[in-house]
Length: 333
Image 1: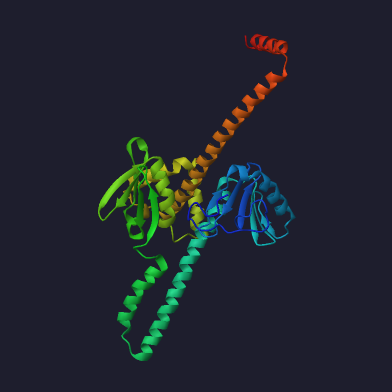
Image 2 (image 1 turned 60 degrees about the vertical axis):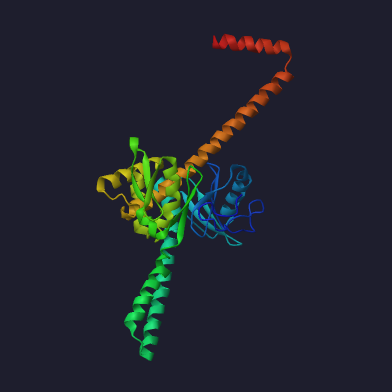
């Protein structure tokens, strides 16, 4: 299991409760579907664990969840705090809106709280500056203007900070600064394919489309939606997701909206739509990962089945083997 978040690259933390899986302070699991995630406490994204590391852990998580008295549950989703500081999120058979609200409510809520905390600190510093300036007779107008610029950077981040690094199909890595996020445009490409216009340098622009655009959005959207959201905004985004059952189609839905309203800049889209786009992009990435696992499982099954057939043929006398082949021809004939 990786020890850092695949989205923000920050440490996932550790637990001393699960000897066979010591990574993470919050785990989400779905025993029915055999899925296990480590929830990053920095960005609240769900990191799907490698297939071979899940099976032994799932049963232990289920037992710990059932044995824990400090838990809250709906019909489909439950949260339990295990001794030792480990949180378990148990997924039953939730409807998609309920699961989306659980998964992304924490993520967007934490971003929002960070903004509020920084704004509170900046406001307190400004008040202290005003009081101190008045005491010594300093001109507050100039100080307030300087601090206003500094406070804005403190709350919302440095405009020159690199907030995303995009790995392009040709192998290049494109750094995107915060101030250039306003230049990221979304639109429908040829044949209705998703396309993004990305900034490069001071004035240059280029377009990526298809899977490359999907990968770019996965990195860019958390930076664009950095202010987070409250419960009502998350609920509005979830309702939009309900209108588009397949997460893979949501990006095209957003692109059509952007084209129809001439709001091609991602930051100009309605906020619930931007939140829904981030949710759908994440779900689509996870779906592709699961499809890759299924392909690997199918290949493993084919190899095992082939070996079993060879073993069976080695154990059978040739006369019985001939009779079985004759029987197969009769049945299929």
